[in-house]
Length: 287
Ligand SMILES: [Cu+2]
Image (cartoon, rainbow, N blue to C red; front, side, top):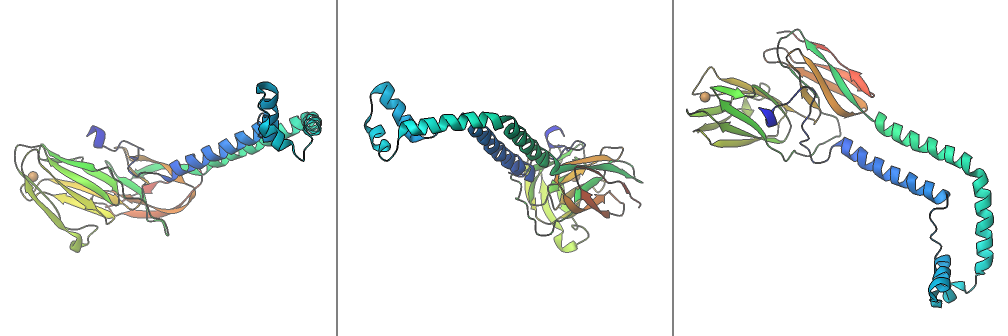
């Protein structure tokens, strides 16, 4: 399992740029702007070319550009004006500083508040379940480039339940000495989406991209006792519960969604949830 398993509350960073990463990017830009404004208001930044040319003239004797920029300007008057301005600025500084601090704090808080966590417990069944955010109207996600893995080892599908984002390519590996087959009779009961990948020996693998969301029951026609599941979630917001049914889905942007709980052999349930920071959603499933 290791690299390919889905631990409790951990969603694989399969998509290239998550909403959360976009928010971080915006946060960095906003933070930089606020920092720039703070420096500027405190007089640390001075982009007055005229004064720069003046300094070059005085220090290096390079006065040609200063002479050009001086035309129509009285440099000394400008310097006096800036000195007076700086004096008056320093009187307003505590006020300005507190306003800027409030703006910066609000910017950071709004970023923190804009994404949250859905967590809870799936009960009524025993063992691992899958919880995911259902299709979000008007929202599409990049197809993950990283492949997921289902191994066939010891006459078992490993992991027994794999959850991936829609559009993920799954590699099916055979690690047993005997040949295995992989097929699924349907996707979410739709027999038209059934598929047989064929039979292959140890060390080889076949790949398939799951573009339709839903539960995929995996079977092997060589070993009728073998069974596994791939749950294809329509969004990147999904989690496999631990054995006690606890789950956590991180980095879900604030908003209203439908979340779905799936368990092998049980009736799939869905419910509306409004995410605002950390949100709880429990399920009770039945056969
Ligand atoms: Cu088999």
